[in-house]
Length: 123
Image (cartoon, rainbow, N blue to C red; front, side, top):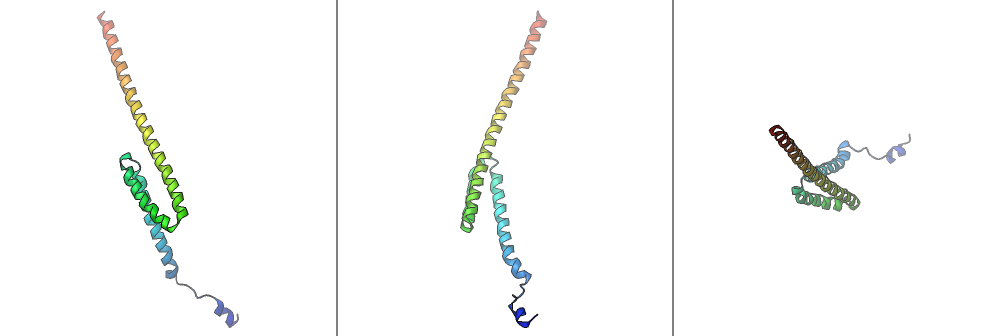
C-alpha cells in the first residue's frame, strides 16, 4: 500500500461517537412509545377518553414537529383505534343488556313453571 492511500481513509470513529446520537434517538422513541401506551390504555374506558385524547394530542404535536408524515399516519391509526374502542364498548354494553334480559326471562319462566306446578297440585 502506498502512503498516500492510507491518508485517504477516514479516521476510525470511536463507538461512543456512534452510540451517542442513536442512544438519544432510542431514548426519545422509548419515551414516545411509553406515552402512546399510556394513552391507548386510557382508551379502554369511555370515561377516560378525554384524557387519552389529550395525552395523544401532546404526543402527536411532538412527533409532528419531528416528522409530519409519521405523525399523520399515527393520527390515522389513533382515530381507527378510538372508533374500534367505542364500537367494542357499545357492543359489550349491548351484550350485557341482552344477558340481563335473558336472565330475567329465564327467571320469569322458572317462576311460571313453579306456579303452574302448584296449581296442578292444588287441583
